[in-house]
Image (cartoon, rainbow, N blue to C red; front, side):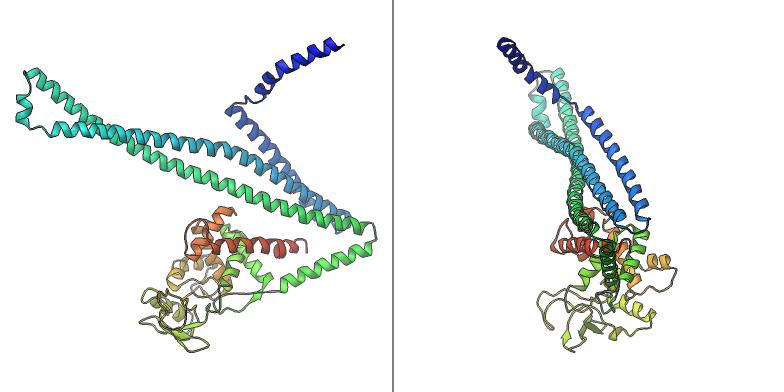
Length: 450
């Protein structure tokens, strides 16, 4: 028996490395096909889960229904995480390939530059010899023609090398752009996974609470249901602050506008509401100035009367402001706009204020969207202080700035550009993304089903 066991052990040890190696010899094509098949299966399960969730939510409220809904949401989140992980696995290989290709192309460029330097040195040597010296240095006519051919060859090599370097540089830029796209997709997938994990935690907590209630009686469930309805009503009635001197509106109305805008533009409601909220939280200077001198753009504090220089850039914005206020029947010198940053007078390095309404667009920016807003609402005169008009203007602008399909990277970049900082990240954009997450989780999600 011992000999048999020893023989088996030797065979196992001998063949184990071969077996392990065989397990890791999946080709790129096989791996791609496997990931694609797995992703298709996961997406199919996701669709089935979403259908079950929709059917279940249409049933009358009960403990069993609510527990089933939560279980289904948890499963949907788990499937989403699985799908995102498959996406990340696929992107990881693509990113590595792109990075390797960029390195290879840069190698080509460097080698091309070395070749170019050598050719140019040879070319300079040939061009530095005078024609007379060239003729006298050759023994017979045949050598002259040979050297002429060599010179033409150098010139052609010079042109070819230049063309190759330009082509390689162009390809590098294309590959870098593709690499950034892949990296953004990877970041979006990772952020989505973290969001789904939080959803699972919340739903699991709610499920455990319902399981405890189910051990009691229907009265306890009725009380829990009443509590949720009261919370939903409280959220709907809560005032949603607006920038630029506009009156606050109920959150229910703000969400209605955001949902309607989402249908028109594809902008995620929570993200749009976060932008509007961020604009309202920028400080006391929002909507606190009057432009009293339309020739210079200077003005005064709305409540203090203290002078402010550069409230609005003249004539770029002041002329547009006159047209906007006149079309709305407003007095341009008594219509509040945002003050410039800094103390009231003679602030060194000051920029301009002039932001109007909830979207805080300066007049010249608002002009860019007048026709689109007019067509969307079938009106002749859009109003920057009207929340519904302002929401759509912000959504149009955010779409133009790259906020599409609810992707994290697209939204944070658009938020930074909306604020005027540019780049793919900034403190303003980070704050907006945190607000969007909180609005979705604490204000929009609790309204589902109530």
